[in-house]
Length: 396
Image (tube, rainbow, N blue to C red; front, top):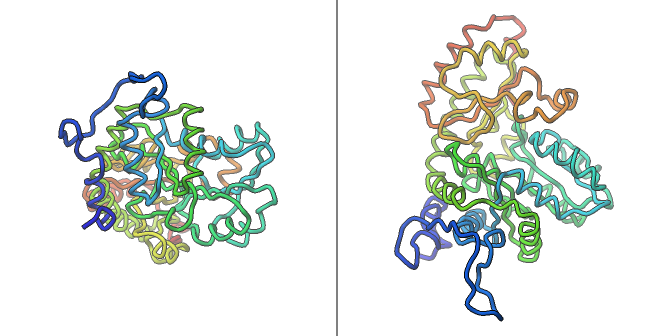
């Protein structure tokens, strides 16, 4: 049985780096060296300086490339470093079409940084292919997707966007942080560049900051490598090792967290003090059918809406199990407040136009028992007043 025939679960543990060829060690060696001795003045070895290449970082880059069905991977110092470096493929006068409810850091990068370099942008409802098509210009070079989107869990038809992009000679970028290659492999659907905040589900333990990018096209890979080497926001070797270690348990972590997220989303949809629930694993979600087609599950992140900021404050003060923090994708459940956390960089009017209200909470479900989390939430909901308008719960 060849490597290519192994299941994803097996590939997480068995790859080219599982045994060190020099010592037989079953853990990837951490090469802290910043520079490498050269034995020949005319021809240098594979490694010369760690910004340009390091054996530990390369092990991670090769691992994520294989898991994403790509040919080349790149490890960066953060998810935003990966996204920013990918955007360096653009030039002055280019145009980007981008998901409207994109992560706040990406919104800030596009609106406050790319714009300074003469790169134009248009935010669109990426769930509407006609809207996307109408926003593509002759100078559009990239269509940027988040699916599921952050924090409203909107689902984009990846194959549909890829067809539009190819017809208009555009590259496609996709942030796969929420799904990971365990649930969604965008390169196999024709996407050009897959991006990750590896800080989240891939590493999985709230103990490392990292970003990853993967491509299938060799020429595009060489372009990104030149940018990675020039920009220099590479991942340190200790952090690369931590991501590699975390990825070994990705399958079992995401499997349990997804199962728990389904139960919690269903419970929230029946809770009269919740106005809306956003989770693509619920049959009433607008993107439910597309998600089932293009991914192997709905994931472990959901959002729900309370009436206002005061309700959020009361709820957060009374839950005991989730940590209230920035980030997601960890072994512990993380409750976040997008208006003041992930999307604080987005002006209030922009947030509200996208449905990111002051009553919205995002939950990344961890490895706790789902029933314990539901009971904890019910205790917090009991502290909120029951108002008639809360009874009409919308499920998305």
